[in-house]
Image (tube, rainbow, N blue to C red):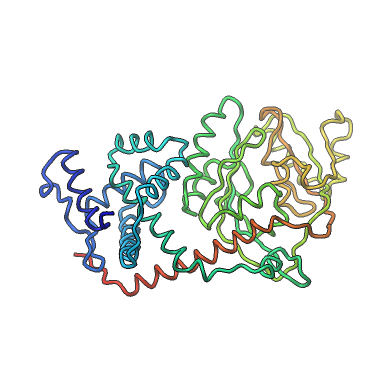
Length: 406
């Protein structure tokens, strides 16, 4: 395998010839920053900015890109220092994995990048550093990360006096009536690619229908066992900053970003049943329907008060249910997980968006804790620990490096 530093020079020269124009006149080899005497060039900065903008990704500003390229240069130097070499199959697999996030074949994704001004060689070099760094980190720190059964027990809260897991999550729920479904799905896929907390929050403020939108979709700490069972493994599989794939729910698309995860001192608690009420208001998310929901909220304190609100109306306008968590519709379960008894949500609709749901939490019936999938918890703990090792290693590389701006 060609050394990464030599590869970068070859990439810049080859691409300059392809794109046309004299190399020196364009200043493609001009150093923007020197990292242990290894130059990050103007060409690399321009390619990365173009790449991120094509993906609508965060961090496309020049200063952020240079900072990222400095980190990648340190990573590539660490990879070379241990003599780690990747096969073409390793890199092809990394390319396929990255392209798969856009639901394009590797060939179609590379072609789209080239049409947008990003050379295939630049993209492959980016992938190579990412794959190599992961292999280096696994080799260097993987042996140190041994998740014991006792640690899993503590995380699950299944041992006496043990702790549970709680997560810090941001949410976006975008209304998606049939006539807008395709556009909302495309927007949701774009949001799912971000790893920036600020960018995700900007999307939430602009597009989300939840009460958390004014806070950028940011929710307070939540016990993992309060969340729908289908959502727990999705969140546990994420690293901080990552976003779930778009989750289709009735008349909407939901996305969740993990901001942090930690063990707590409280015993984890599972629930056998959730008591909730849904009052259905005609008009969807119209101003009149939302105004009626606000009036209902002001007039009631507990779920039983809704019987008075619904008096004289058709029986189907009020639904009162007590169900095991697994039997609750997923969108209801997501909203109920955020509510305490007596609190309500107006984020959801029914009837193709024509009916607003006034959803109220009535109460929870506790149950003896059942096993959350132990392998999901172990994977989450292992990932968090390796990520901490990797971040510390990179911080040390930066501290020891000579980083000079010419």
